[in-house]
Image: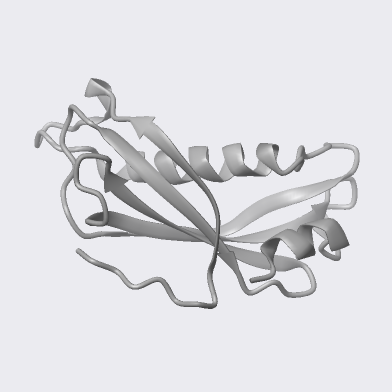
Length: 140
């Protein structure tokens, strides 16, 4: 499926992941739960790349909602390109959104998903204001 990326979303990261034989289910395609792992791996890799390393004694990001839309089945073997976008910074939250495509089929989206991320003060377990440095990164 070809998907047009809204201008309100900012591409911040992309990575290539290898599908593993164990990612498949009894139907012979990548299990739907594994797509969430691909999205999570990319999101976490991006966070570390921008210096966002959560501190249990301080603050950091927490996912409060995640979704994935499945457009085409993925089958082993192959490599995937996951492109991560950010948008909609608010006082304590921002959105991430990603597309998943096979590297041998560039531009043909197999799935797209995302998550709402909230900034949390971990000791108090309450929402905290998104730090200026993170707001600058996630503002399109």
